[in-house]
Amino acid sequence: MRDEGVGRHGVTEAVLVAARADFAERAGKDVHMMRYDPLPALGWQMLAEMFLDYVAARSVQDPALSCLDARAAFQSAARAAVGALELTASGGAETRVVVDYVGIEGVYRDAEPDGGRGVVSAVDWVDAFCLSFVAGTLPETASAFIESSAVLRGRSEHADTALAHALLAYVYGYAADRDLAQGQTLTSGASNLALVERCVWRVAPGEDRPRQRAALSTLRALAAGDRDGFLRCLRSQLTVHRRIQESRSDGSRTARSLLPLDAIALAAMAHRWLQWSAPLSDYLPAALVTGLARAPLRVLAHGRDKRPDALAALAAGPLTVERPRSPRPALPRESVYDQSSGEAVAKFRDPTADPAGVAQGLTALREIQSVRFLSRAASDPDGADPRQHAALRIGAQAGAAALRLAHAAPDTWVEVTVDGTTRLLPALRDPGAVTVTAWRRTAALAMAVGLPDLLADCARTAPEQFAAGRGGANTAYALALHAYLSGTDPEHALDRALRNDGRRARAADGPGAPAVLLSQLVAGDRTGFVLALADALEEHRDHFTVGDRGTAVDAAVSLDVLGLACHAHRMGWDVVVHSPYLPRGLLRRSPD
Image 1 (cartoon, rainbow, N blue to C red):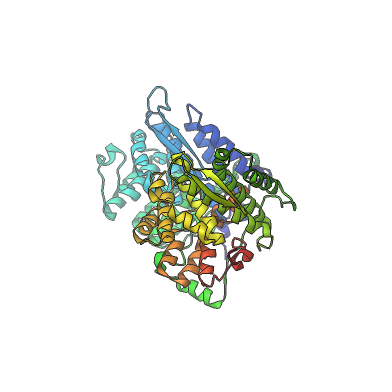
Image 2: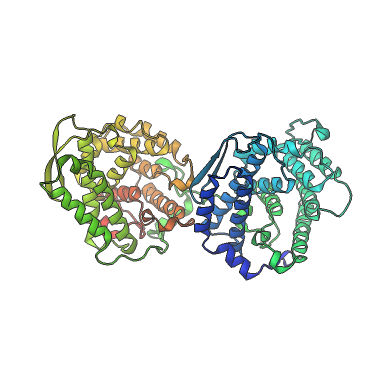
């Protein structure tokens, strides 16, 4: 039964509606503008508050915050708040702020023209610290908090500053106030408790800053390992917060006031470190207390560590991965993509067209067909429309033709075929014609249609032609897939791809490469492939449920995953995953 003693205060519907309205669009515009702000610390602080307002408004409809969109917004709030803190305290040092929700990074050099350190508010410091802990980004931002705490010294008698010092003491065993413990770094739990207690004892008597005083009491009980005392203090802390908010007029209560960050962070520390349960309260959304991590994978690389519950679910029948309804309008029978496709193919067939121009246009033709397929797949999840397969086939042929021309000898001419028309075209002179992304897209299309000559063109591309690309997970996966398709030992390249998986610069860059799924093919593990396929489809879905990413044409299907699934099906493997992300008409189809 929910504890009514810690029920949330009210916020007007108008405030909640305003926080949710057109949020993805507003966030994208505001974050974009921040890249050009010469004094951005205040702007990032305001953006952190905007993200929090949105998360809080979503929590009214979904108290547990089970929605991935809201979780991603919370993590972006944490990064924005830490960015504001760093910009205020950095003294002009280079600062990077990455907001995954909209996929934008701000880089600032000499952001403070006078080069001097700004004034760090203890309240803002604590909020940023609590946000970072709850979001799971604290390990990468620890130095920012320790360094910025220097400007808080000398005010340890104030409860807000004492709370900042006590958090550093409990989490890091760090004494932020030189007067308090000569700035030493300690490690033992008992010593950390002693530091926390000193922070509490140094606070001057009074009734000011009641919220911070209540948080200090909760933190002290947590540091002492006093579970009953912690629960009692946390309830009291929530009650104090509610009383403060209820003393304000309805119109002055913000949506973010529904998320008391200090209480949420302390409840999260207790749960994650000590396995203590927090009091039931909508002030403490379960996702924020327990952690924002995704559910564990059904299977790891090479078929290792299959989850027993996932195996049981598979034994009971096909796995299902649903797809949210596409926000894109349904395509008419004849769409602009079909028209563009027809024009591009007609240009390829035109005997009067400049051969060099036709050769250069093959990459564009491949992309036109990719978009044509994805747009059709969004409104035809069964793959019944023959234009879906036609788009995949023509796109794969155009991509493979570009690869063939790219690795042909200079000043030679090569025969290539696209959609039944064969032409003699000159070798591409641009050494950058074969990029990692271009090869990977062509390989995915070729695996989806399964035509041996197209797969052979992908395999013939020398790895050194794209290995010098941008690097990271994209190149590592391409090298592993190339090794698999070319029949060479893929283990070394695959190990590198698996190490790089998930190390993208931003989550907004897209779902990770399906290296774990590819590893099941390499290992010959059919069961592991099905489990990893469901994982890969869910990762794709989860990525595109954040913000306005669902409007992207790539949201309909992951071409990488579809290609691997079609390839496994043609090998005779039973692909028992039902999903609109896997059009059954394409899986059942034999190569032309």
